[in-house]
Length: 335
Image (tube, rainbow, N blue to C red; front, side, top):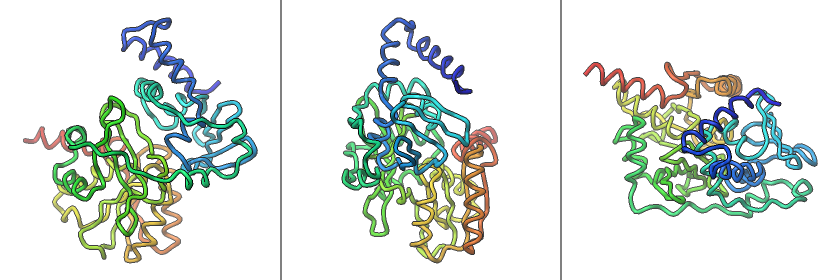
């Protein structure tokens, strides 16, 4: 039905082979259990507030306006990317790019919230988000797994230490997994959003009740700084800060580093509203089709508002973390 169907089948077969099972074995039951979680259950549990009503039986998301979900059929279609599927499993692998193995494991451990059949007749899901409230996951006693994971991905100890000490990064445990928690705060320093990322796979999701306009921010040392670099993901923002340490062209905290948690304009607007001294915006989005398209929109919007905007996708790799890993490899070879 959709272009990615053959690839999903191959991924499913690889998953079975990798775990040493057979299509009729217990791992098939794991896959079937994962497919039993609907898209609406997954979004209501892991991304509350993302849904936006289009018609009586259709929703889109705040992050992707061209992605249409039909709850009654448990289907989605992302028109701008010509990608579609059914069930939460297809949504995680196709839209969020979680690998098949991690998605199955995550959905098998997920306790989805019940979604009433009359949900299509409810008012806006945004009200559901407000009533749910926001609470940070319980922190572990240390950040050893998070530190090991992020340093393995090239993040410098200095950047890592700053984020932990600023309480915008910590470690939590969910089932058997250790997760990074990236925190978004308001201007008063109060946590308003959080994004979890597994240290042992590709599973990632927003904490329930998160307000997407509060992005992950590594602030400049000078609050009157005139430059902000904007990234899609927190790890990319930390990668950008690490790269600046390697370049030695200016102190690494001479700019703000803002992560959106996806292709989302809300954190950009909130940040600029509360930092009127900003004059230059550097867009450091992924070097893929969605990232390039979003950058083009933001360049036009911010240029019309009087900002100097520079579009700077990574010089190598898909995102800035891949670029950082590439640069570190070159440095190691030189040494």
